[in-house]
Length: 263
Image (cartoon, rainbow, N blue to C red; front, side, top):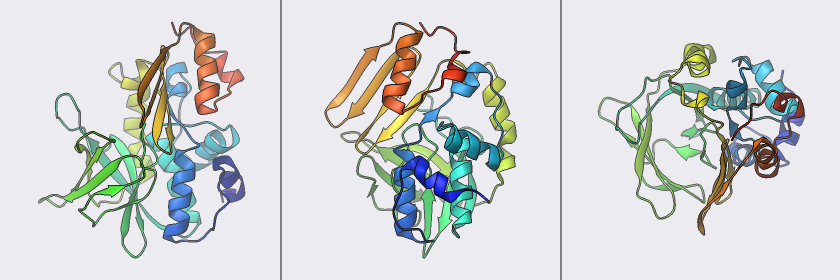
């Protein structure tokens, strides 16, 4: 059993607890605004484990973040313990440059059953801040981005999103087939070790904000909100470490000893 009190303290959630939309919405928003998307372990060669207990220790006890398999892996387990019906979904991602699609195990998302099914995804670099109605093909908003979910002829669903001032753009597709967390182990391993993995090229550490987001890489900080986009160059490892602490709340002295110079 997971320590739900510790989980709620980690994400700063003090709202109602029940298997309902109010709780789901509150937990999702609190989670994405407090737990960063980050690939530090992959960059420093610390192996990841798709085990719920290990994920809880990392994200809650160590006050870390993670990437999709870790973040949605833990969040799905928490929701199940609270009594929600949760289905783990394999997701194909769209390459924005080529328009090609990845395998259906490239990303993990969650379908949560209430009086209707909701798409819940806390594992993107700019995640939705609210559950999305899967059966509603109208435009939905989380207060920052806009979303639409389309049912495709072959039975899958297509998610499109757009930030303020930008058109909706296809982001990913998913079907309704139930997956297990361990089904993503092979992709998780490849993303940690393959030379073509985007997570080995640079640090990618992102935090959603209520209206915007911040991204910290090894060389820069990028902030995006309704006022526009701002960038700051990071010239050395100390500046990178301070940016992680300031913008993402990551204070990792033991791990950071292993970080190579970023400049």
